[in-house]
View 1 (cartoon, helix red, strand yellow):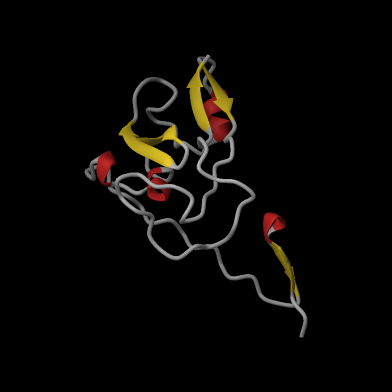
View 2 (cartoon, one colour):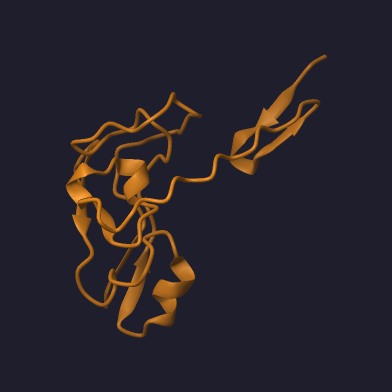
Amino acid sequence: MRVFCLWALSACVGAEVPATPVPETIAASVPCDQISRLDCLNTDHCTLHSTGPGGYECLPDVGVCEVGIRQEDKAACQANLSCTWVDANCFCPFPGYGQTKVPDRGESGGACACGGGPPAMCVPK
């Protein structure tokens, strides 16, 4: 059987698509500098910042555009009139495309045309 996949559209013809793993919930008691790049995006108390090509820091939320807003929640960001949404620029959400002091868990789950750039962020206007 021939299998044809379009990862960008998450559609495969002729095969079952594996379920997307549910991110592990990171307790607020875990210090941000002990969280991996991908896990940092899924916390309620930390924000992932780019430090240069492929380098990232997971830092505690600061200010009205980070505190109480999950980093990947564009709608919550745009609902805050003091904030604006900045799209990711060559950020790849798969392991192997950069890291914090803590390596991402798991094997590479996919490929991106580019990686190592800044993630999407909610920033002050």
